[in-house]
Length: 128
Image 1 (cartoon, rainbow, N blue to C red):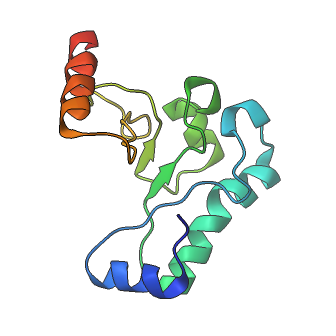
Image 2: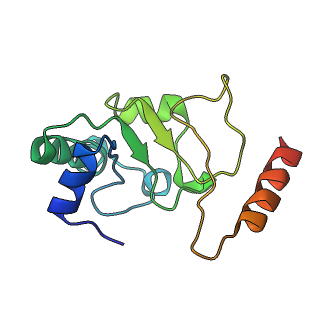
């Protein structure tokens, strides 16, 4: 689902934070972005949204988000220091030791139920 300008503005007014992907939805690690490309993909979307919505954008979510698409903290900081959080789709339990630029998450779908989510949580916790 894509949100339009008015919907995003309303969400921000309700207290929601917004974050970014990349400009062209590339796999960040697999693309081996040079400095200019990294700016276009990682920094420009942040600047654009902050300008459009007069808000702070501090979260980045990797397109695709699998291990081969993501950078570790030091690699990410070599590209940009503009974010406080970066999300992968690695299904892990985040804790105090999880680097804030390497956060995992589970992406619920419209097919998930309370039972399937509980099952998934138990599976993730079992692997922790």
